[in-house]
Structure formats: C-alpha cells, structure tokens
Amino acid sequence: MSLAKSRLVIFALIAVLPMTLPSIAPAAGPSGKIIIFHAGSLTVPFAAMEKAFEAKHPGVDILREAGGSTKMARLISEVGKPADIMASADYVVIDKTLRPKFCDFNVRFATNQLVLCYTDTSKFAKEINPENWYQILQEKGVVWGHSDPNLDPCGYRSLMVLQLAERYYKQPGLYQKLLANRPEANIRPKSVELVNLLKTGHMDYAWEYLSVAVQHQLKYLQLPAEINLGDYHQDDLYKQAKVEVSGKKPGTTLTRTGQSCTYGVTLINQAPNKAGAVAFLAYLLAKDGGLKILADQGQPPLDPVRVPTAEMKAKLPAELQGLVQVQD
Amino acid sequence: MAASTVSVLLLVFLPLVQMLLSPSPGLLWETIRDKDVLRAIWLSLYASGLAALISLVLGTPFAYLLARRDFRGKKLLESAIDLPIMIPHPVIGIAILSVAGAHHPVGQFLAWLGVRIMGSVTGLVIVLTFVGLPFHVNAVRTGFTAVPERLEKVSRSLGAGMTATFFRVTLPLTWRSLVIGQIMCLARAISEFGAVVIVAYHPMTAPVMIYERFTAYGLEYSLPVAAWLIIASLVLFVILRWVSAAGEKRP
Image 1 (cartoon, rainbow over the protein chains, first blue to last red):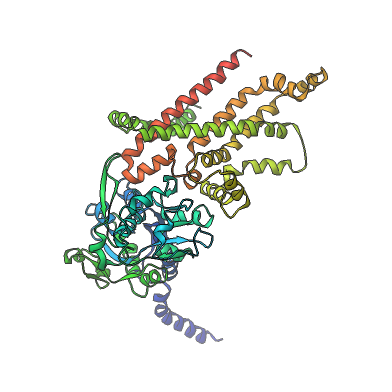
Image 2 (cartoon, each protein chain N blue to C red):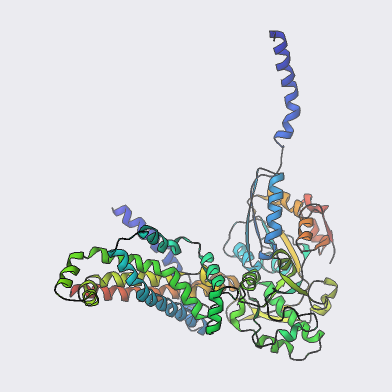
C-alpha cells in the first residue's frame, strides 16, 4: 500500500467514524443503579422486566427488593431507605403511606384476583369446584391458610373473599365457620411463602393471587367475579367486605374495605436516579414492554393505564404523559 | 491497644445503646405489659433453652468423640457440623419443612406419630437446635481437647470405668466449656429469625414479633420489643457467666 493510499484509508476512516459513534455510545440513555421496591407478587414479572430492560440499556443495573407492600412502603417512609420506584400490590398503600410526602403520583397499571390454590395431593383435590370449596375448607383435617392481613394485602383480601362468599352463596355465618377451621399457625407473613407449604404437603389449600398460581404452576380454583376481587366493575359489591387490620400502634385497628386488586406504581421524590427510574417506568407502562410481560404472567394489565385525576396526570414526568390516561 | 478497645466498644455498644435508649420509658412500660410481647419473649427464651439442653445431651458425647478419637473422615465430619453456621437461614427453614412434609417419609412418619412441625413449638425447637448445636459442639470439643488424655488414662488404670472417668475426671475439668457452649448455643438460638419465620410465624418468637411489629406498625413499635429482648438476654447471660465464674473459684 502506497503512502497516499494509506492516507486515503485513514481519511475515510476518520470521515466514517462519527457516523458510527452514536450507535456505540447512546447520547442520553438511562444508566446507573435503579432501585425498585415491589410487592412480592410482582417478583416474577419484574425479574423478567429487569432482564429485558438491562439488555436494552447495558449501563443500567436494576436492584429489586421484594416484600409485603406495606412493609416496603414503610422502609421508604420511616427507615428512609433509598428507592427510585415503588410498585404496590394495592395502589391504596401508596396513597396512604407515601403520598404526598414521598411521591407525587400513583399510576394504576395492572390487576389480579384471588384464587384458591392446591396441588394433586391436597385433600379433596379431585372433588373441589366453585360450588363446594367453602364446604371443603370447613372439613376437619383440611389444612388451609392465608397470609397475615396485618402485613400483606393478599391476607386481608383473602378474608374479604370469604366474607363475600358468605353473601354470594347465601350461607349465614360462613365467614366465622371457615375461620374456626383455620388455626393461627396457618397464617404466614407473605402469601408467596404459602406456596412452599403447599408443595411440601404441609398445607392443602392456600389463598393466592392468580399470578402466583400461574407463576408457580399450582392448580387453582377460579371463583366467580362477584367474590374474586378481580373485576373493578364489581367494586360496589366488594365494598361490602370489611376487614380489621392493625392500625398505627399495637392494640389499635383500622378497617380495610373491599376493592378490586389494582397494582399501583410511583416514582419516589427523593429517587437517587430519577432519569433511570423514569426510563424504566416508561418501559413498564408500554404496551409492548412491561405490560406484555404482566399479561403473560397472570397479572392482566389495565387498559388504559390510569391515574384518577387530571391534576395528578399533570404531575407525571413528560416521558409518561402519553402512556397514562385519566380514568377513575 | 486503647484504640482497639475503644473501637470494639463503640461498634458493639453504640447500636445497642441507641436501641435501648430510643423508645420512650412510657412506651417501654406499655410494651412489657403487652401479653403478646411477654409471650413472645418467653417463647424465645423457652424454645432456645430447650434447644440448648438438647444440644447438651446430644452434642456433648459427639464433641468428646471428636476430641478423643481419630478416624477416617473426621475432617469431613468436623466441617459438616459447621454447615448450619454457613447455610443461609431461610434455606435451613425450607430444608426442615421439606423433610417434615407430607411427601417425605420422615414427614409421613411424624404425621403418623401426630407430631406437627409447621407452626408448632416442636418445629421451633428443631430449627433452633439445628442452628445452635454447632456452637455447643465446637466450644465443648475445645474444652475436651484441653484436658490431657493422660489424666483419663491414669483414672482408667486405677480401675474407674469410662463413665466414671468422664464424670469424675473430665467433666470437673471441662464443665466451664460446657457452660460456654450452652451460652453460645442459647445466644445463637435466641437470635435466629430467618429459619424460624419459615417454619413457624405463629406462635411468634421475639425476633419474629419484632419483624411483624416493624412491618405492621413501623420502627417505633418494633424497637421496644427489641429492647426488652436485649434486656432479657443480657440478664440471662450475665447470670450464666456469673455462675461459670463462681464455679471457677472453687475447683
């Protein structure tokens, strides 16, 4: 190669280089750590989203922490643990514990419903159906449980289903009769922990979210929409269920009123990585992004993803405005 | 040396003192009158005490064996006994529940006996023994190793049997390490949370209650329970140390 030719090659390279640069180093993509606190029941879809999002943005490292929604919210509000995003299994937790001091908005993005999970070896596994389940749960020797209503929304929702069943099946006293066959030892802090008890045969039936049943390949009994807390058109019916849970201090209680299972997500005001968090939220709330993963995992996304008021919508970051609509 | 002492004291005591001082006296008083709290602290001490006693009975002969005999696979056995210290605590709970489950022969045998592991004091004691036993065995083995085998041989040659030798020669020389083993085992058992919460959420031990209070009511109401558990443990351990020190003075 002559000197002139090699100069030409070098010149050509220099000329081409700037064109290839943008694809090598994206100008302003999200990067750094994004800390997400989320409900235990969102673990599987959020793990899948983490993988997909990190593959798309190699500079991002998503750190997830899962737990009862109330506890996770408390870690932010009381312990002051840094977090960018909080996703709750009950959007009310965000309103109650975090808004307006720790976050500005609360986007409802997905739904779920309560199902009664079991395995092949559960007692009466062959007979159970939507007409007789409440009789089976009263049988002596049938071990069933739910999560702690004071710690886990799935816990008080399980109790609400039982209350609604009392009305729906017209069985006065059913709620108390069912609880009489459920010793305290069958209560666990988080509903997901019951899965292990089912699989090891310590328990015959456990109340879980549909998503948990799908993700853990459990058998499950789907209940009528009037009692399964999965259909927000039934909210007027659900409202009749009321469960006492622990209040602000030991010995006090507050009342939880039945409502459809609606997931809420928010951006924490003190987010250490706001840009990254907003980018992840935009991915989570996109129909071909996080919402699709949720649908595959038994947590049907809401269509459209919504906030209750125009005032709240105005507080959303610009990147999310197009994804969220105002709808009560 | 002074710097080392100061840093150790700060590291250990600063968080503990903070923990004891943060709840208001009124709240501390209110907490200790709460029957659930008393029950949880008592259950913690009681189940841990049982676990320590079981470790004493089961672990002491085993520790003696490790200290006195050499055999093939001893190193492996010695490492194996330390496993409960290394395994993540929830895994211990899951493992115990799996063995006791209806799909496992052991679980089926237990069910036939009418023994329930999930959510029972039996289950608690098994978990606490599992995590505490290595601490007892290790402390006691060290004690046995320190006794010259010569002394035991002399006793045997003078006509004492193995049991008599153990109780009249070995034990009087090593009982302090037995007490230390018990203290370590008890301490470990009282502090256990991860494995316990998987096997039994109810009945609640104190660490589980601290977690439950924190989750349901927040930091303010979990701190006083923690403070009382620390006070109760401290009193217990001071007594045990005092007993072992008093025994030392009159050999």
